[in-house]
Image 1 (tube, rainbow, N blue to C red):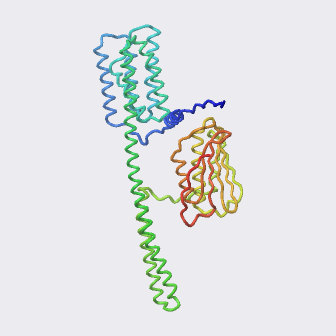
Image 2: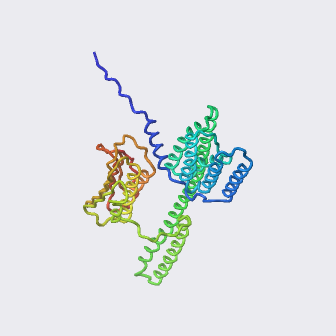
Image 3: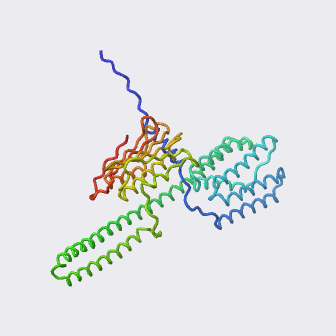
Length: 406
C-alpha cells in the first residue's frame, strides 16, 4: 500500500504582501514642500480663540475654567504647525488632553472642555496628509490611547464612544485619501513628463544620427579628394564644420529641454574609486564595509558609473529595509575582462521580496552595458545583490537578460 505524505501548507501569499505594505507605510516619506502657514491658518486660529473667549464669558460653569481655556489655546496654537510638524502637534495637543483627562479622573470632577477644542479634529487629518509614515503610525497610536481614556473620564455611552472614535478615524482617513489623490496626480504628471522626455530623446537620437551620418559621408569624400583637388577638399571641410555646428546647436537645445529647467551638473560623474565613499563605520547603522580588489584599471566611464550607482542603490536598500542587519559588505573584484560587484547584508532571512523600482533600474543599467545582475535572499540570511559587467562598454546594444533571483 502506497504511503502518501501530507501536503505541507503553503505560506499564504497575502502575508508577505501585507508585511511589505506595512513596511512601505512605515518608510513613507513626508510630502515635499508642505505649506507652512497660509491665511486660512490665521483665520482658524482667530476663530478658535474667539470661540474660547466667548465661551469663557457666557458659560456659567466655572469649574477649572483656566485649565479649559489653556486647552483651547494649546489646540489653537498647534494648528499653526500641523503641516510642518504634524507629529509634534499631535503629541502636544493630545498629550495635554491626556493629562487633563487623567486629572479629571483622579480628582473626580465633572469638567468638560470647551466647544472650541473641537478644532483638534483637524490634527489627525494633517497627520496623515503631511506626516511621514512612521509619524502617522505613532500619532495614530497616541490618539487611540487617548480615546478610551477620555471616554472613561466623560463617562460616555456606547453611542458617544462609537461616534467620537468614528470622527477621529474619519479625519485620519480623509487626510490619507487626499494624500493618495495628490500623490496619484503628481505621479501622472511625472509619467507625462517622462513620456515627453522619451519622445525628445528619440528625436535627439534621430537628429544627431542624421547629422553625424552626413558628417561621416562628407569626411570620406574630403579624404578622397584631398590628394586630387585640395581646394574642393577645403570646401568639404567647411561643410563638415557647418554641419557639426548645427548638430551641436540642435543637441544643446534638446538637452536643455531634457534637463527639466535645472542647471547643468558640471561635477564629474562618479566612478569605481567613489565606491569607497559608501563605507560607513560610525554615524549610522548598519555599518558599511567596502573592499576593492583585482584589476580595476581601464574601466570605461559608463561601467564605472554603473558600478557606483548599483552599489549605492543596494547599500541604500540594505540600510533601509534589512531587518536587524549589523553590516553591509560591498566587494568589487576585477579580472582581465570583467568586474564583479557584490553587496551583501547580514539581516534576517527573507523568503519573499517584492521587486522595487531600484532593482528594475539596476537590471536596466546592467543590461544596456552587456552585464547581468542577480538579487535575492542568501541562504545564510540577509539579501545579496550581485552584478557582473564587462570592463569595456559594448559597441552594440545587447538584448535585455531576464531577471533572476538567487
